[in-house]
Image 1 (tube, rainbow, N blue to C red):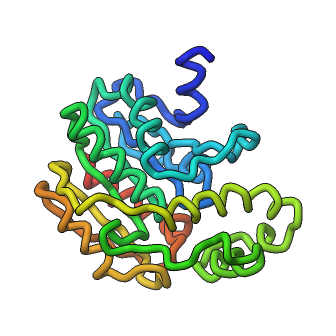
Image 2: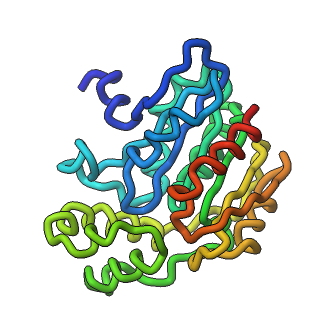
Length: 249
């Protein structure tokens, strides 16, 4: 397959600024897809490109096998991003995406000497304090979907529709399997500064667990909270993007 075509499958470019000062690359949550970030384009500061990672096994990659090992996923994403490091880059990851973005940042720093402008982590504790206790292979679909539904702003149609469930369950299970097996190295500090974001009613993590990201950087850490649950990003989209713009500019 042509290399450029291969990259296009992994990276969705939602906005290219006429004079780009920064590239914001977003990483979706478990079971999620890149399109959740598409509306951000209208709210980002002028001069910021908007891109999002499309994991295999969803959207137009539905027939591709999901990646179930964090190292394999992060290695491939780094390869995809290399041509885009010709200007400053910031990485935003929500939930599972925060851990993926951390692994990508660590690889960029240690293997290529490239430190992103910022690592922006949302709705997830640092990987050295966060563990998925449930083996998804021991739980049925109803239980897993119930757990996801309890997180907050999930479209109930997804939980009720057999067709939609059939589409999302393979990717969701693969992502949860990857997180369950994810055993990071001893915590290694980044040079990249980290900013944490959290919904105040998030049942999956606390301000304390998000604060733990401060232990993984020598570049400084700050935490911003918003009203809302695990999926605060949707109802709080405008204040979140205002905070990101301030942080990045």
